[in-house]
Image 1 (cartoon, rainbow, N blue to C red):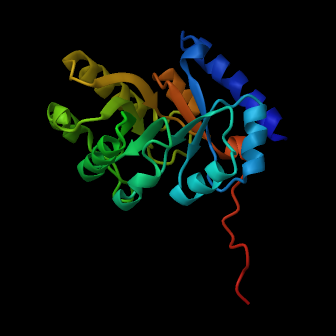
Image 2 (image 1 turned 90 degrees about the horizontal axis):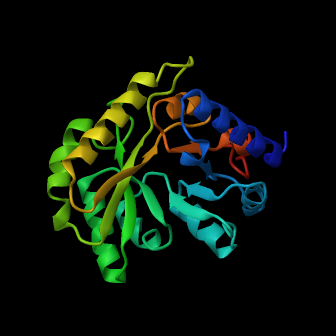
Length: 237
């Protein structure tokens, strides 16, 4: 199927999942994960109705910005961000979804102050407590938010999570529910400069389940662009 056909199918699935959950489909943003996709494919997706692009790698973000690949869409950073690359991302994207440590949060705050801007972020939760993934543990978040006022020029807009890879529909429901419950708890405590308007959870294999459990943003890559080619461009030999 073409990118345009894939986008149309996913929007239809979002609508169906939202209605089944008693929700308004307009509450859910489709963020196209553009990792390892060329600028022309990104433009094709935007032409097909994508209004939010999420980039995983700083080098790709910089390259595609130079190619004006994201014209007509909001830009988010959704991959692991190293502190030494913060300058290339802060102020270039409207939302950094993957703030996964206090050190990174401090670096983003410092750079936002330097630029004289407010940078919107999400806090990434390692909800499955997987050693292979970065992110805050759910138990770390409330103490962190107590001290957020000490970090100027950053605004927490919500939470992001990547649950374990699921093999069957419903496998990740408990993780989605834990994220939603955490967001409700944070919202009730009314921390300064913190809101929970965004719950970024759900990808190509589980986004319908995520919507059923409160997701307001899903990150879809392969279901839009097809399988990624991880082979090197010039194989050795």
